[in-house]
Image 1 (cartoon, rainbow, N blue to C red):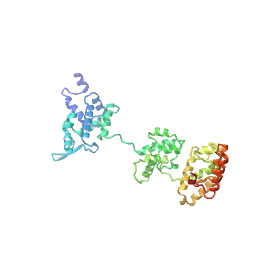
Image 2: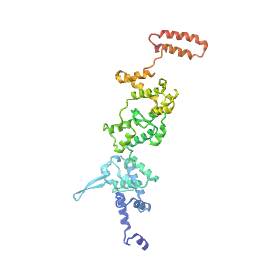
Image 3: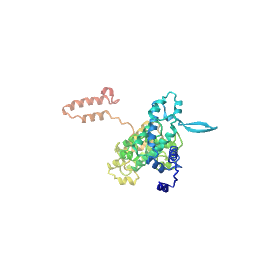
Image 4: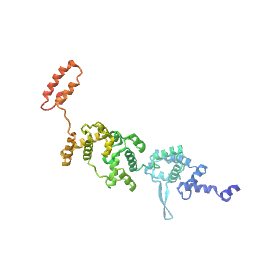
Amino acid sequence: MEEILHNTGVKISYNLSTKKDLAKRLITNGLYDRITKDEKEALVHLCVINLENQLTKFRKVCEELSKQGVTFDKFIYSKVVEINGKKIKKGKTLADVQQEYPNIDITHVLDKTGVDLDYDMREKRNTARSFIKTSKGDVQTQQEEKILIELGVIEGKKKERPVLTLIRVGDELVKQVFEFNNFIAKGKTLEDIAKEYPNINIEKVIEAANVDISYKIGDAIKSARESYKKQGKQWKITKEEIAKLKELKIIGIEKVDVFEEFVSILEQMHSIGVDVSKIKLKHTIRELAEESGINENQLKELGLDPEYNIGMKLNTITGIYRYSKEKMTEDRENQVVKLKQLGISLERKYRTSKEIAEASISSIKDIELADAEDVALQQLVEKTKEGGINKDEQS
């Protein structure tokens, strides 16, 4: 005993029971300016304070109350009482819960859990939070925490602010030479990007950014831009995050006329000998250029991105043209003319009856049927010379 007194610097009159109760109150009330995290963990480890049993008991009390209709996400754990003319905030006990919920069979709760009416719900919740916070990794504690979160007694992990998710996704896309300033984002998900930009390794983006393929990047970009312009429902964005979004060209960019940009790219490709009239939906700039014998280095000298999906962009341009054909501006009409000069038409293509007939004849494999089919097709050609093919008559 003398050695213990010497090593600790306390007197023989040191009251262990009193100090234990004091330590428990300090931990329960979260007064960490008076007791450190390490000291708390040491007391728990030495079993001086058994918070784990308190956590389990608190969870059982909450479960029994929940079964009888107490909704903890709306439950207020404290009450204001007047003592000697002063208003003091105190924790609600089970006796208070009984008054607040008169239909509850509180005796059943007490019998099931082994607590009494003086059981302080606020104090026990603070103790539970504290123990969970310092016991990460413990399987039993995690199970208790999960149940308390489901009951609405304690809060789960805070969701990441959406702007941080967008920045992380944007970073990964830009690493793969994705350009947000040329991206039509409205309503798009990462799955749409995977289809529109086949050269993007979308699985790598998903893994690195910790999102799934249904991530609504279009909605996120819209929210970021509205927040930047202080319009609509705004996110909280720091100056550093605004700078990063600008760097990624997600916000703060001049609106690009995709029509004009498309024509400009094709004119540049045409100037070095690319037959742009052969463009197909699947084509990247590199693939279209290679068909005309133009290599990647020549494209890069013009400042063009070889992996840019020029075929998909034609599909977008065609849609824009057909949708807004009646509202054509003079500039847009000039761009359409330039495309025609490059051998590209945005009009719907209708095959003539002769083309259909010739295509059908070439597909006939049985020589014995060829003459009969030829007669039938020639009749079809004559019949449709004036007004095209009547689909009802074909069927």
